[in-house]
Image (cartoon, rainbow, N blue to C red; front, side):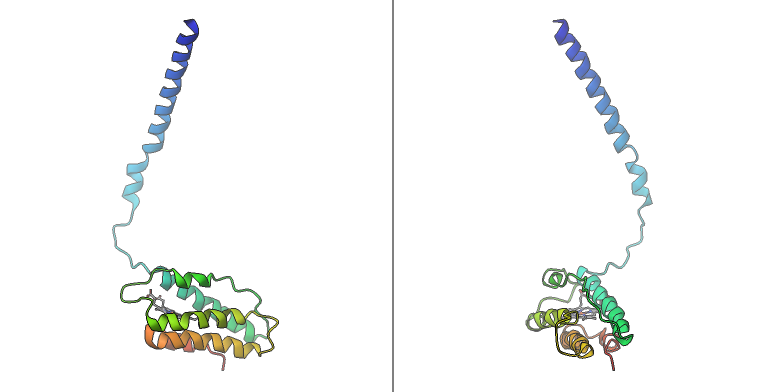
Length: 151
Ligand code: HEC
């Protein structure tokens, strides 16, 4: 009997402790909510973020190539091109589907150190693959992408 009673007291104590813990965890939440910005900010699509990453990467390796260095790594996850959500008005059209794999191959070939095609040529091929898709799928960034070409 005494054993059961002790157990009950213990259980009660544990429950009480848990309650206090819960309270401590939930209490700061209303304050957090207030800090959220009330402005609705421009949210780039997952695809736009990926494209901007591809742009930044190529800008960086362009400079390396001009400096006579050989880029050896391609940290972008290009397979995301097949799944990333796009902004309104864009989608995986027939043109998109016919261009995307060629671009991925061309971009990966830039860092293929065993290739016997000249580095600058492989790089420009990748950029021309950007342009081939952009010609119909998203014309706005074309002047910016053209500047990536090495003359
Ligand atoms: C297979 C087609 C395709 C290829 C290849 C492609 N793009 Fe795009 N790109 C698009 C589409 C479609 C969008 C619009 C995406 C959206 O708004 O969700 C876009 C958007 C962009 C944007 C604008 C992002 C923004 O902030 O709205 C830039 C910059 C860009 N691409 C650069 C590049 C570069 C650089 C390459 C090559 C390294 C490239 N793209 C390859 C189709 C392509």
